[in-house]
Structures are given as C-alpha cells and as structure tokens.
Length: 99
Length: 258
Image (tube, rainbow over all chains, first blue to last red; front, side, top):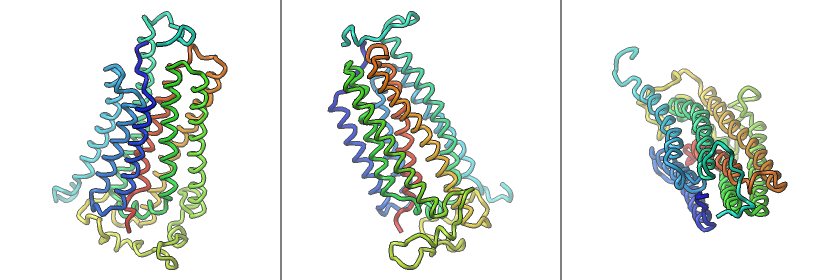
C-alpha cells in the first residue's frame, strides 16, 4: 500500500489553521468592510474548504483523476452560480422597457 | 506499511491494493460531486434571493444565534480532526485508536445536532418557521435589541429599506418592490431551514455511518483494519464539514454590524 498517512502534527496544524480562519470569519463580519463583507467571508470559507479538501480528505496525495473529480464538482457549481448571476446581475442595465 | 494481519482482502478484479484503494476513493468522489450539486441548487437559490432581498435577509439573519453557530462550527471542525485521526489510525492498523476516534467523531456530530435542535426550538418560539408559525411582526417585537426596551423595528418599514446604508439602490430586484418585507424575510427562513435541514439530515446519516464503522471495527468485521471503508466514511464526513463552512457565514453573518 502506497497511500499517504497524514502525521498527527499535520492534522493538528490544519485544525489550528481552521480555527484561526473561523475567528477571522467572525471578526471580518464585525469589521467595517462596507460592501466587501461577502467577498471576505467567501474567500476565508474557500481557504477553509481547501484545507479540509487537500489535507483531511487527502486530495493532495490522491491520484490525478481524483483531483479532476473533486475539482469538477466545484467547477460545475461555479458554472451554475456564475451563469445564473450573469442574468440576474445584468437585468435592467439596457434601460429598455421590459429588457 | 501494513502487517499481514491488517492488510485488506484484495478483490479479484483489482490488480493490487493501491488500485483497489484508489478506485474506492474515486467512486466516493463521484458521489460527493453529485452531493455538491445537491447543495449547489440551494446555494444558487440563496444567492438569487439574497441578491434581490438583501436588506430583509440581513434583518432576518440577525434573528439567528451567532455565538451558538460559532460554537457549532468549532464542534464540527473538531469532529473533522477526530475523523482525520481515525483514518490515520486505520491506516496504521490500530483498532483501539480507530474506535476511540470514531466514537469521539460521532459524539461531536451528535453535539452539533443537539445545539442545532436548541436553535430551531428558539426559532419556533420566536415565530420564525415558515409554514408552521411564521409571523414577522411578532418575531420583530419579541426580539431583544442590544439597547434593551424598545424593539428594533427601525428598519422594518419598506420605504426605509431602500435607503438603508450598504444597500445599493440602483440594484434591480428579483422580487418587485411591492413585496412586503415580511415575505422577503420569510424567504430567508425558508432557505435557512432547507439548507440547515438538509445539512442536518446528512449529519444524521454521517453519525449513523461513523457509529456503524466503530462497531464493525471493534468486532474486527472489516477486512484488514477497515482502512478503505473508514477513509470513505471520512470523505463523507469532511464533505458535511465543508458544507457547514460555507453555510455559517452565508446564513449567520450577513451584516451583523448594526
């Protein structure tokens, strides 16, 4: 078996980073960031998700095809959200009645 | 390296243990990709409605208990750590370690569900459950504002909603402006209960699976030390954790500053 065994130290470091990022999320929500709240919160959430994906879920040490499968899941989600928003965010921009 | 005692049975259609293990991981990832889409539909719905009803969503979100959500996030992240440790123990073939960490994971998962139940009960008493007892005016008047005394109904008037700070007035809306704010807030709670509810269902399944794995490992029922089975369960558990990582800021932390 050639599978990667995560060390206790690596697990604890990832956990500590997750805790720091969690505190950062809450602190960010209470800071005067104006309209950047969502961007900051989502960036931190993405960083946390990547830590869990790469280290706890061992994607970093997995085969390329597993990389592709795990990335595809989130790429599809990104396509769905961005194409939907390309409609909703641009409504009314043409200043034509009914467009 | 595995000793022969904790080496898993090699099924005849695989060349070696590495291929067998990688196939199991790949299969689980194919399933998790469908799960991302499952939650993705709700997240997209949330994005659209939040975009069209930002002010009502921010107000509604203040009815959620941020500290309890914070504690719950810690509980779930810790359960991911114990799950990762259980996977490690299984790779090392240590049955005792597997059982201890899996039981800890299941307990933390149950604690998360318990805290969630407390929150939902509070939501029920605050008349915040759409379809059962949703009443925005009761919810608003029953809410204790930080200043005490006067309920925080300052922002509830729809005409003020349009001029509130951080609310771009040039933004086209999903719902027409004639939709009362109570309906917009109700939509937040519909999404809140569907998203946290679907997450809780996944977590219940996760707790049952983890408990089952602990039992089977203890009984030495699994082939080898159950490294493949436990790692696949771990993937599922970590996925639930990732979903919550996104749900917490999306639902609890919209414009918490007043």
